Image (cartoon, rainbow over all chains, first blue to last red; front, side):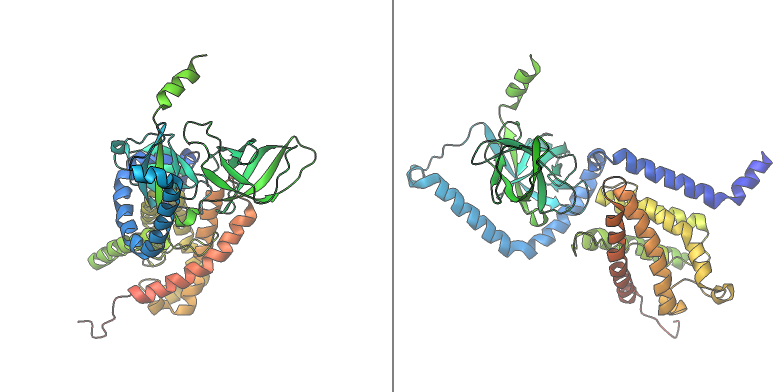
Length: 266
Length: 174
């Protein structure tokens, strides 16, 4: 026993070093698959308030460009309504989906698995697996919800797969991220007989319950042709600029439960 | 003793706030992540025992981690850095040089020594941090590139910050 104390006293630094490192590595590995996800519930309410304050300051710096963007979006919406509807002053809305506007309070593009925190939570009716879009295109999916905040797995995440189709010929493919550049993603599972051109547009397929159909995802940047395999891969330029993201819309599917109940019964 | 404690607590809070509110939001590019909270570990007094150094490093690393949503990542790198600090001090100085010195600051040890000392420790810290973050997803080349680009930037910011945050020296000692 005495020898043990001597041993501990002599090597206390090494023992403490090993203990702390093991503790850290366990925490890292434990959180690796969903990084934020487990931690989010505990820390969202603490750090959420903090990030809300800092993002309030940051907003002043972006007011001008944000105004321009909103004006542009307004004009786009107005042109979509057309004059007939505009005079009627009643708008026919898409009943299947409703949208909750939210504010990005923390965002990252430099990690391998990136998450966004937004300032709407359970009291605003948010639930995990809801889609998130912005004016320019798809952003990601809600993964975790606390009372006032929610964390969103952005498309810049190795666990994110978004089902898409080509706007002009309706063929379906999947969009993933290779972790290199926040501007570009990869389109996988493109049937090899399909001829892809630079600039082809990809939109959401509408097959998942999270997104409405025809939301812009991006355009083809570079199509590589692999002769041998059955499926091709292409480089995609995201239409969403993830590094300047400020305002997003959470997509609520009003018939989600009904559709899900159909999927369970076989 | 009492003074050192208060100064360290203040340093801890200011550095964590600076790191999460300012430097984590600066985007110099995809590969550059300035770590400035390591100033806290760099400036601990010479006579701090290693275990105390490691526990303090763990706490500041973990505080940064909580806000970044990466529990254990910065903490692991900081503890590793704290563990190697006595070794780095011993290879860059002679024992007689630091006997009457209080802490490894620029004013006491000179700028040239401080640059070398913090450069070595930053390389150790960033290598460990980026390697642990990449783990399986990123390639070794990317990690080395990140270290190569981040360390000089961090070093310049750290030295500027130390000059900025240094309390005004009063020669008459009150």
